[in-house]
Structures are given as C-alpha cells and as structure tokens.
Image 1 (cartoon, rainbow, N blue to C red):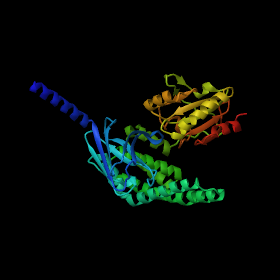
Image 2: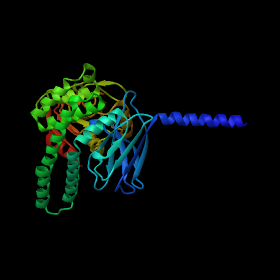
Image 3: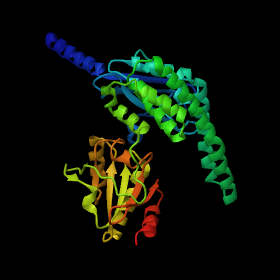
Image 4: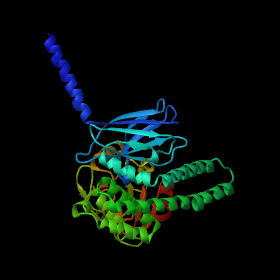
Length: 391
C-alpha cells in the first residue's frame, strides 16, 4: 500500500514538473501600483493584438504562468496596464518555457520597467531600452499628458476652448512625441549594425520603418533600407520580413478613381471569393480585426446598413486576423454579409490599399472603381457616408 501511494505521489510530482517546464514564470513588483490595477498580456502583431491573460495587482505585485506558443526561439508578448497615470504604450517581453522573468519598477512608465532574464532575446531588448531610457521616459510622460488633455476636452462646454486645447495637442505635444520617436529610432538603427538578427532585431526594424515612412524621413528610410539589405532571403520571407518590405518598398496604392485591387479571399467555410464577383452594386469594404474595439462596435450598424441598402450595396468585411482568431470572431459576431480573409495579415490586400489603421473603409462604385475612403468609426458615420455617396 505504501509503495502504491509513493508511486502515485511520484507520478503527480513528475506531471507537475513537466507542466512547469512548459511554462514561463512572469513575476512583477512595481512601486506605486494600486491594488486592483489590471495588468494584461497580449499576443499578436500590428493590428491584431489580442489579450490572453490578466492579473490583478495586489501589494504592488502581479504574477503570470505563461504557456508559450512559439516552437523555435523566444515568444514575443506585450504587457499593458490600464488606469490613471499609465502611458498608452506597452512593455515588450520575450519568454521561453522553463524560464523566470522578473519585472521591477519605481513608477507607471511601463516601457522602461526593468526586466531581469537570461533569455537572449530579452537581454537584447534590454540593450535597446537602456540606450534610449531618457527619451523613452519623456515620450511616455508626453503620452500621459496628451491622454489626460483629450479627456479634459470632453468636459469643456465651450467649442472654442475645445478647439484651442485640441490644437495644442496636435501642433505642440504630438510633434514633441514625434521628434522623440525620431531620436529613439535613430539610436536603434545605429545599434542594429552590430547586433545579431533575430526576432527582436526584426521587430525594431519593422517599427523603425513604420515611423520613418509615417514621418516621410528620407534619411531614416535610407538607413532602414541599408539594414534590410542585411537580411537573408529566409528572413525576408518571414512574417516580419514581409512587413518590413511593404513599408520600405510599398505597392502602388489604390487611389480614388482606380479599379479595386483584387485578391484570393476565403470565407470561413474555405470557399474562394474575388471582389470582381460582386460588381453590379456599390461595395463597402470593411477592413477589420477581432482585437479592434471600434471594428467590433461598428458591426451592429453594418448589419443594419446591409439590410437597409441591400438593393444597392454589398458589404464585404476583410480581416487581418490569423485563421484561429478570425474563425472564433466569425462565430461570435455572426456577420450576415461576406466575411473574408486572405491570410496574409497586413502584407497582402491590406498593403495594396495603404492601410495603416483600422477600421478602414473603402467604398466602390457598381463598376468596381474606388470612390471614397475613410478610417475610424463613430456611431452613425457609416450611415452618413452611405447617404452621401450612394446615388
């Protein structure tokens, strides 16, 4: 009997040990965090970030056990904290099974919290952070200021006061943030000359390209192209490599008056669709992701518009989600119109329409020519746009 009990105990111990080897421990202790603060971990890329775990701060501490998904190399996840005084940014983390990652900090500027880890990718990420710590802290402080000012605008009664404060954000604070981001990007591109090319390196180059192209900074763009030349053919064909390529060498963007760019698009049942198949009615292309709050908020209005305008309009939603995320969201949202995916994320049909943010809407004529484009969602604005453009 004792031998049987000992065997069962050892078996349970073995299972626990194997389970622990499959997980990465993430523990945090940050001074000044209030009890009840929510700390969340996200997976995904660009427009498809999705939360997968959340902990509630207690006594300035938080804790996660993460079952990593990547089979080769460290998995990149992002930590986000919500609440008063936190910047609208994230902390980049790299995790491996069987490892422990310790986060410490003295304030709410989470991008520069200290991360102790012997994971190679995290050590490399720390080099980038430490090299730009001064600029990163100031950049985070500015994001906190602008967030607070936008909230203040909502409380102002006078349109003039709202306009004055809004202009101060757009023409003073945002340029300050952009100038800091340029300094950060320059330093990161310089560091990349001597660092090994891995996921961290590729993430940094992708971010540098996004900023350089947005700012139309020819010097930064040229520096980024020089770094891109360092990539092997295999690295260029990776997801990150393709994201970098479409920023540096963009496709010709579809403009108003052009024929729609078409692609192989699939519905949740696996059937192939093309945009040309829907000629004859106006087309509203809805570029979306299940991790985009405004995209989800727009679905009820689109459902209503699909019914009201059914004789003149076809709505087609095109997702940037991976297959798993998209299929789950499709079941939950129950769209009554074509809901398609090219499974290329943001480097397929999205890149041909020059999409930098979602929701993004493209309205086309019955002949298949682009007539209007807009971005973002507010209640009633889809109906307003359709009334304006559909004859």
